[in-house]
Every structure is written in C-alpha cells, then in structure tokens.
Length: 131
Image 1 (spheres, rainbow, N blue to C red):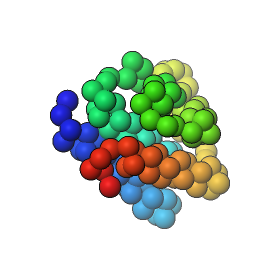
Image 2 (tube, rainbow, N blue to C red):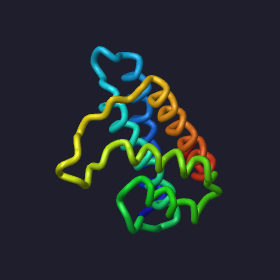
Image 3 (cartoon, helix red, strand yellow):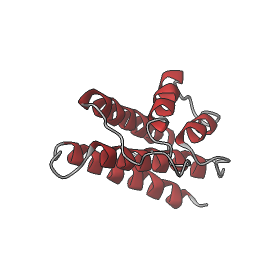
Image 4 (cartoon, helix red, strand yellow):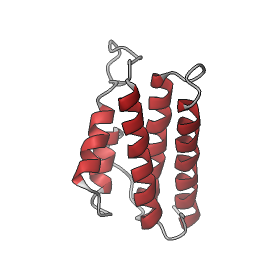
C-alpha cells in the first residue's frame, strides 16, 4: 500500500464520522442503529489508515480486535480501547440469529460520537498528512 492510500482511509473515516454527526441531528431520518453502523465504518476506516501507514493488515475484522492490533503502532489509550470494545458489543453481526437493531440512548450515541472523534484525532496526529 502506498501513503496516498493511507490518507484516503482517513478521508473516508472522516466522511463517515461527519455523516454520523449530521445524521444524529436528523433523528427523523437516521435511527440510532444507522448512526451506530456509520460510526463503526468510520472507526474501521480510521484504523485501516494506521495499518496502511505501517504496511500491515489486521488479522481480525472486529473493531475490538482491530483497535487492539492498532495499539501496537500508536499510543492508544486503554480507555479508548475499552470504549471501542463496548461499542463492538452493541450488535453481534457474526451471529445470524442475533437481532440487527439496537435501541440506543441519547447518552450512548453521544458517547459513540465522542469515541469516533477521539479516534479521528489520534489517527490525524499519527498520519503525517492527515490533518
């Protein structure tokens, strides 16, 4: 992977995060579950930017595993890792019998948006041109 790919991951993550933030303001159109999924896509793209920068491929596909693996490349606060793990447990997309919808409180959504912004800031500081 080249360095331009890394920046494109950051840009995609930022686009998803901004979409989630705008969607949160339009609850008549965006459900909490939709915002959750958009935020997860954002976090995944941000983390892929770190992997790309270090020419690495994550060994697992869940956010919980990806953030733990990314911690090997950057100073990842333990609290942030735990917050992402908590988000990852909201819906179990690997279980075909698990529900695909979740009822999320305003507090949960605000917390998740905050996690997305923290990860964006961390990745922005990590990638040379991603500012």
